[in-house]
Image 1: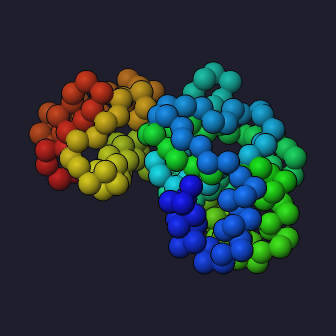
Image 2: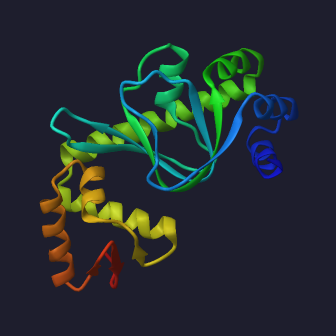
Length: 211
């Protein structure tokens, strides 16, 4: 827990805020590919990530999925905060895509602390601004960019984030994040492979030339 406390102090600075947040929340270690929130559920706790990553997804009636945004270290979930504070059901679901350490903050604890600590209000407002911008970029990409362009951007972002040319991801996972069919992603990856940009392997993609 001390590691989590140090992490929070770097973000919030206010020691009283950190102490109260730690006292009223539960630290959790979540394995990869674990669903931590289901669409249509009421929000009881809000995640704050220390390590790892959570992806927030939407699914339509046909089962088609699309990535809304990631929750990275030092971040929380804007949709969970909004739904939790307003006693509404979640309009998305969240799943870890790598082992994740997080603080589970009860919504009532968060509500009380927002009234007490302006620094926490600033954090939440900045989070909403950031997520809003991400969703605008997502809408722009879906509306105005081809799938092949979005696939390359996705691969570049993964390469940068992992600091490695080996990207551990399946074609289906990429399709879900891009909001398209697996067959479309597989076809585009084959084109990149024929162009000697990548190497397709089971469960991973190796980038062998600049995309």
